[in-house]
Structure formats: C-alpha cells, structure tokens
Image (cartoon, rainbow, N blue to C red; front, side):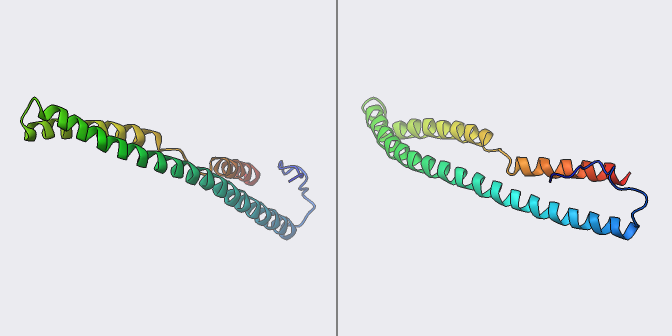
Length: 134
C-alpha cells in the first residue's frame, strides 16, 4: 500500500458516504492482503515443520532400534550378577527415567508460534484503525 495511513488526506469537504466507501474498499483490500500473507506464511511454516518432523522420525526410529539392543545387552550383563528378574527391573527403570527426561526436554522446545509476521501486521492495522477512528 503506497498510500499514507495518517488519514490527513481525508478533507472535511468529502461526503461521509464517500469516505465510508473508501474505508470499506481499503479495508477489503487490506483484509485480502493479510489473508494472502497468512496463507503464504502458514504454508512455508508447515513445510519447514513437516520436513523437520520427517527427519526426527527417521532419527527416532534408528535410535529406538539401537536402544533395544542396548537394553538387551544391559539386561544380559546384569543377569550374570543379579537374578534375571531384578536385572530386567533395573534396566526397565533406567529406560523409563531416560525416556521421561527426553520427553520433558522435547516438550519444552515445542512451543514455537505460527503466523508471527501476519499477526504482528494485523495488530499494526488495528492500531492504525483505532487512531484513524479517534
């Protein structure tokens, strides 16, 4: 929008109906622009996040297989010193603690908001509209 947002170009000689028509046209154009902006930003954000999820899923699968072998190895090693049931219990509790720790760490990183640029632009538009209507 190359036009000024100050409202100083609206003289008192212009009829109210024409002013309202201009406001409606500009508001519609602004709304369409913001909707397009949101759609574009959302598509880009989702594409980046889906790629990241795919990489994490592949890595998680490899880690799960590796952890299974480590758990079995740990169980078999402990079974030579302890009773088999006690060795299995120790290894299971250690795995549970490690999994809970990783879950909490992943949860703390998963709170990135969507559409930050679009929401900020909409807030700016609302501030401008409020100053125009005062």
